[in-house]
Length: 123
Image (cartoon, rainbow, N blue to C red):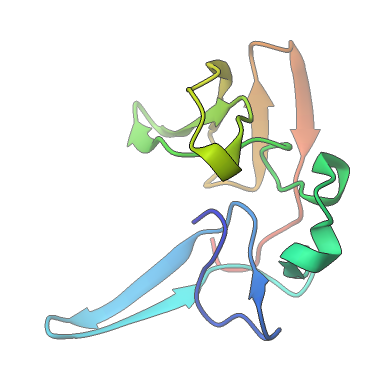
C-alpha cells in the first residue's frame, strides 16, 4: 500500500509502502497492516510537507505500484516521482527492488546497494 492503508492510528495519516494481511473468507474479509512496532510511524501530508526526505519507506523515497512474488522473492517497482497536482507524465523507474526474506530486507540492483528495513515480527 502506498499513501494510505488500514489500521492507521493517526487522523489523516498514511503508511508509506506497507503490506496488509488479509484474513477471513468473502464476504467477511479483514485487512490489517502487517508490521511490527519498530516500523516507521504513519505521517500526514502536513508532516510530509512536500519534502521527499520526509516521505520515505522501506523501499526508499519512491512510489511503489508494481509488486509481485516470483522465483522465491518479492519484487517491487521504484518509480521516479512526478507532478502529482497536475497528473503529470510518468518519469520512469528508478529500479526494481527485491526481497528474498519476506520483506525484512530489500536489495536494490539498480543502485548496487543493500538497505535494511525495519524488522517485522509477522513474517
